[in-house]
Amino acid sequence: MNRIDRLTAIILLLQGGKRTASEIARRFEVSRRTVFRDIEALGEMGVPVVAEAGTNGGYSLMPGYSLTPLQLTARETLLLRLALSSVTQLADTPFKQERESLLAKIQVLIPAQHHQDTEQLLQSVQLDVPQRKYATPFIEQLLDSTRAEQWLSVSYRSERGTSRQTILPRRLYSAGGFWYCEAYSQERREQRTYRVDRFTSVSIIQAPEQRSAPLSPQLPYGHPSHPEVRIRLTARGILVMERDPHLGDMIQPLDEDNGLLCFRCPPTEYNWLARTLLSLGPDAEILAPDTLRNLVRQMAQEITNRYTPQ
Image 1 (cartoon, rainbow, N blue to C red):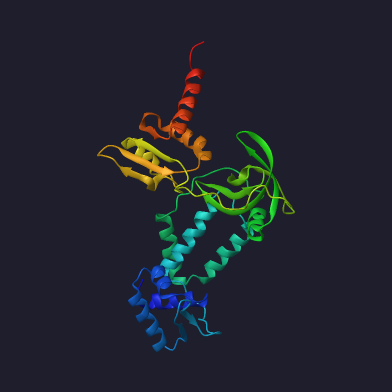
Image 2: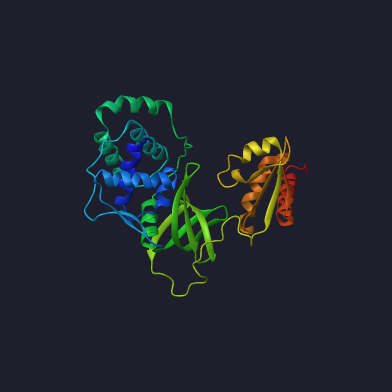
């Protein structure tokens, strides 16, 4: 990013509210000294930047000041189109009508000279989203309830069958081509992750009068209160687990051919983890904890029994 583009971006950033020099430096990956020079340059250009010293200080713009709408550069156009195209690759997405109207507006915003270049670039670069066939009829309601902090009564289909639960949705995200909803479950007394396409009914209800547990977030991976998981991986095991969005960055090299996957996670994740490790076969060896080793041994024995001649 050249300096002119960065100065413009700083003005747009400050239109959203006060920012410290450190925040601006992190956002644009420059030093604080560079930020100070940029702020000084904006002042010389007549941009009314207000500097406040002290603990709660920072930079802001005088009330009422804003830039007129700016044309998009070729790279900005590509990024915007690329982001939108990756969303449309999902089997089901919220706000379909709004997505189409946004695409139409983007076409108007794009300078005429960038249209052909953008289309050519989109043919040569793509964000890979796995193709899935499913429907998420309740995704917009889940989004609205997350924003409004509304409790929901849901019917959910899992590997154990269909259950009725009372949940408070907190976040929706997409991974691996599927939509997921993180929510606090009143019945399970913990925060859980649900696949959105597995909801079979969703309805808004009043907040429970007596909550079975404080609505505190589930302790994250890596929290010292969780047991430590240690798994030895072969070279093939490393290649497979490096693609995992949660565990891929936790692999440490042991020697030229082996690696160590080391992390902490709640025991409620062991069922999922055991199935993942079974799929690796001889390319993964659990060193700790014994609870996980025993669970994998039990699952492996069940598989062996299934194929043992009677």
